[in-house]
Image (cartoon, rainbow, N blue to C red; front, side):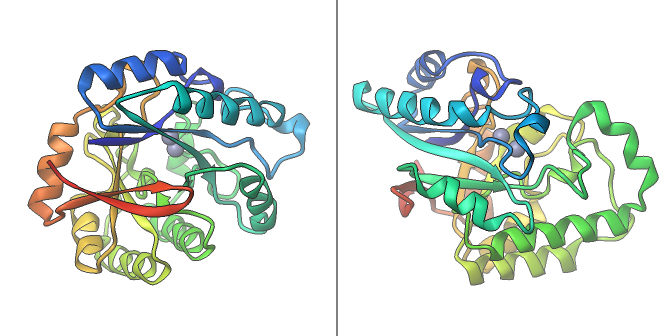
Length: 267
Ligand SMILES: [Zn+2]
Ligand SMILES: [Zn+2]
């Protein structure tokens, strides 16, 4: 199995260094891992970037060098260089510039902000009550579709993150799921099966099974990630993830080398 979504203490809100994550991955017998720490908050002026949300701009080069260094030193397990990058409409060129200067294997796309509100931040959780759930889900999925269409991302991370605190819509999301799955197929972007949802009030993986099925039906490839923020979370609940992928119909998972997609058959 391949865990493409690992954070480290560099992002300011995770625990552990790369060596500890690698040691845990070896213990689990993973064939490959990818570090995908949060890219610097490129859409904000440097003074407004929160060092507890993402690494500062001046540390990005160090992060890249550290992953590449481990990749060269590590035998028996592949290590890939990724980042998790927020999509911010209007800042596509800035992100593109930041991505291009480094030899990244892949970029995970994500949405953590709706109109500046960090909706997955536990400290800002009380703001959900100000919103109509159906309108909020509609707004959120439009942002995800914009991110998908931007061409900046290889796989969309925790694609229905809005459910994190179990703030659920009243209406079924079928039409939004279908629209998103079609958009992902059109843009040739992968969907990530992310097990971190099992650790939060949502109590289910990202994406919802119905959305994962829609992705499969539209031929959208899948990547796998634990979104580990501590070494012991590497490969979190991958047994369940694997069982779900098989049940939905997937027979392989995707990973990336130099931003080119590769596939590995499920065990
Ligand atoms: Zn994220
Ligand atoms: Zn993450």
